[in-house]
Image (spheres, rainbow, N blue to C red):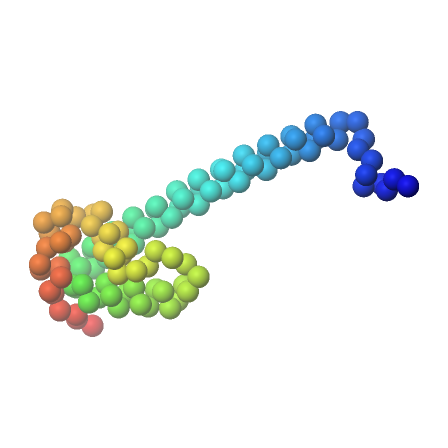
Length: 111
């Protein structure tokens, strides 16, 4: 005996295919949107760190502390390692002034 779920009415496969395409396209747009937002967030993080470093003379120890605090506040989110925060920061300054420079690595922590 056939069940209602075994019966495929006319036009059903076409509808299913259309919905599959729409869902797949929406998933792709959502992923692009998320990536776009994350890139903007990382840019903002780097910019905010750069401003504070210039204003207060913060060094690498602050980045390590900030990394620890952010990972504690957002345990399910990735991207807050000290290395990543330094990478975000380096997006906003010349390599000679922060990325790989000995002054950025040796500046002491100031609370």
